[in-house]
Length: 150
Image (cartoon, rainbow, N blue to C red):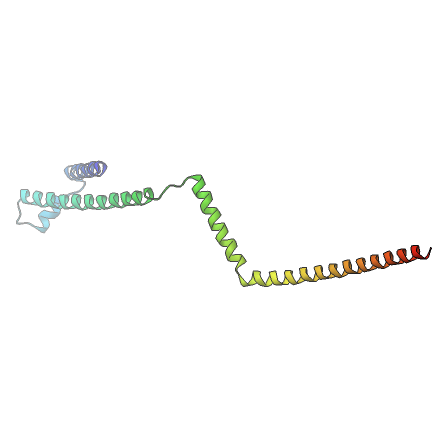
């Protein structure tokens, strides 16, 4: 706020200096438009106009400063998390997404496909094992019968 007041004061000083050196000749404009006013009254009119401009600029700067402060407050209100809290949150989110994937219909269809192929493989292996065990029992029986014959 101090910077705004200093800026406005410097702008006012610059305005009156420009008017004094007749770079901005407002007094002549007011004389031409308001011929019945005296110089003092025209000076007061100019002073009132400049004060109104200064007040408007102070109001604008105050609004801008308030908006900036509000943004800072919003950013500073955010809770700060430690690294472990952040990692736990990431793990929870990952677990949620994995659970959602597992519960999805597409995953269930793929799982059914793999499950049936696993069952097929295990059934084939079981039949091979049964065939091997049968052939072993047959060979054992042949060996036993050969021993019995001798």
